[in-house]
Length: 259
Image (cartoon, rainbow, N blue to C red):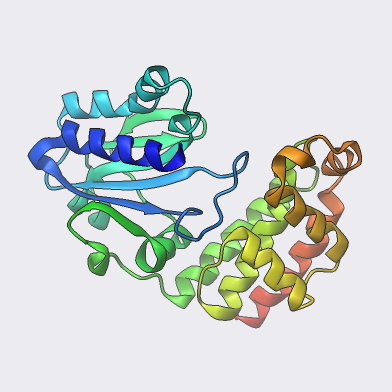
């Protein structure tokens, strides 16, 4: 059903855009071969030749809900996230008509951009679903930009992950730290699962047993939510996350980032 949802979504987006359609790119966990039901979203970047008309933007904004209602047996339409705008607006950052799909809703905005990690995924690991291959035109993030992005992520971890709630996704903080460490050390991008396993192999995590549980939860979400002891742990991960974040902070200082 996942492949069917992607095909239907792509075909309908292209039909709505008509001659204005240019490229549809899939990035994130699917091209990285780490799509996990219960965790993962379906990340799309749709680029057009000219700015969206208001009519196109209005239809596209609610397209996820329209398809979810039309295909109630398919759970994936509401998992799509990303942006739809002109190639020029995406590259320049100038005001444009942009449709945003996120986990908390959707809107028509004047800009849409990707962080350095998503841009790295788009440049190196995305899949062209339809249209012109514009990936050679996308700017590859520099090492300095990636380090700055990691520093920003560390600040978010310090602010919001001192305490965690009783949710499977609380384990995600540990996997995010592993990804940041992988990027700093290699200049590349890894899936959350691969990054977590890499961090264990490199003996980077001061709480390896907890990181192993995070990997189990990501790979076995349906089973994990039925594990009372595992779910109880998610409510008190804050100190373990911060200990792993200390490793990330030390790595940033090695790269000359003043925090």
